[in-house]
Image 1 (cartoon, one colour):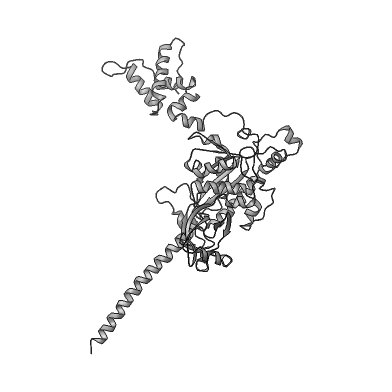
Image 2: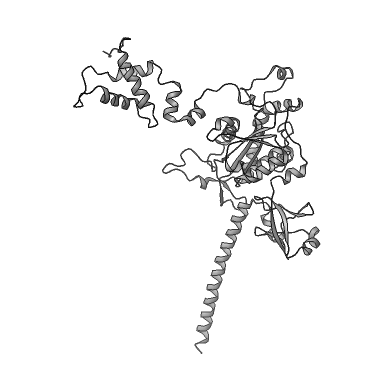
Length: 454
């Protein structure tokens, strides 16, 4: 027969006090002992004689466990905070009220964050060369949940943040056209600099260039406390939404699975087949879907929105807020967008043109100007990630210089790819030079062998 459940009378207050004291002092601890271990410690402290023998009539394990659950000590915040820490409780278990999108009342407040892509990419010039995992930065509007811009590439840090902001500010129709993708302005309507950005306290979001950008355009910046990703949950969720949509399709193509760190796991670098351009195209299609076609089922439309027949999509909400004039976006000229993320430096002009990062730049239209500037230092603006984009700054004007014919083969490569390919070329040349020296020595030996016989 099953053992009947024990019942206690209200007079057993002394035993109950011992139960509660043991749970609050031992179980609610950062050491996180099991409930059974707490029960054993309680017996050792309160229900043993001087020789350590258990007293007769000591509480049973079932009674202790019944008290724990019947009094709700397994619920509540005290257990979670004491055993897992306050940070874990605030992030994953605290009560949430309201809607994250009601935090702001105007479009133009972007939540920003970064993560590393969960797949390996190959070089577009040599498919056998793996260039690594890309970094993904997102800017998500707080009110509408619209993904306003993104950056995907090998760059990380402050420069990547500027890329993301510049992408969020530019015209998306022209941006997508660069990758052969045709969209309408309604599908991805965001354009202009944000009035406010919300980030964590990562080093890349608090650098000097970000400070200068915010001061120049009057962008407000809010830095959230550390270890609180829940306060920018929209951008955190957007990462998973984007990556979940292509996970199945990219299995076997360099996609990193959950068993990546386990023994005998597949080396996913050997499966890589997508280039950086392929990855960016994939992201564009996914972002356009999330912005224009995905229904925001948890978003509560106001009576005013229902009267205006607003579609419950990110782009539909964006258009409504923009038409109502509830926006903090700052419109800039197109040239300012392209120059937003450029860095500047000083280089020397030689007889082959402007030599920068091991590549030569020049144009026939500026031959006379470069001739005058030979052997002198000039200021250039450049994209740290691209090899085919260099501007010569003269009297406040930006003169675009393309790669010379000698380095034209690098024009479609990202800087990381170009450097890897150039290093491979140099290694191959060194091997050929060593082989040539050996061949010359062999030739001299053969000649001396023949001549010494006579």
